[in-house]
Image (cartoon, rainbow, N blue to C red; front, side):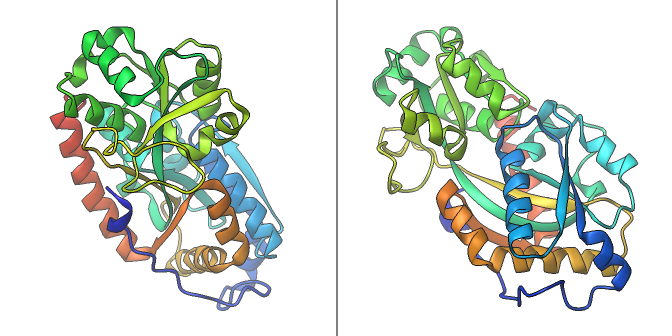
Length: 323
């Protein structure tokens, strides 16, 4: 999925005070937004939640947020808790995205995103293939040559099994004639753990959203071999996978969901909250700084997108032998 396949549909709302049309009781609750992150601290979902908290407070849309992390298996450990224990909470949001869709399928989870309330798709992000600074792989071709020679000797760290990182690794392998089932993929519940394995030279490479690696790339601890976007990106000294001879593009997306059992009024209020946040200069600035592309989609449109994306990802995982 490339950048061109996303449409920015953000609508501008006034950002002064609380949202219009929100009942006084709900307005009081929303001052303490509860955010559920079904992943360990340090990864893309956690970064999204903490950036949302920062922007929402800066825009005076909430008083603060309580962030709860429950990591494991691409969100499928935390999802049942959000579905069952957070049911009916009208001031709660869960962060998730493409990774969770893939992990639900790959892990044959008993719970899926049809059991929560879609609120908004927020951002898209291309992925990066990186290696430790001391790696013998200087180019993507070096990495591919080693992968084709013996894929078991090229362990790659990323997010949970079946997620966007795993999918991209499988697509790269397929493009160069390596069986996806022979890959050495090392899944982690959070970006912090994956980063530690890279910096500790415990793996040959890593795949994730560029934003998760950006600080260490700038600091010289990691090198970017290639990115999965449709074109080169300003400020990133690396070719696209296509430029490197691998005919693959992939764009990861992230969004938010309310628990099941909330009222239509509260669903509408949460959608308005996300629309107002997304239209703010503060959010746009954070997206630019973090390399996120704003791709706002809300309500019924987001629900339809989820169904279509689930079918697409399931087909990819089956093709790669991961489902």
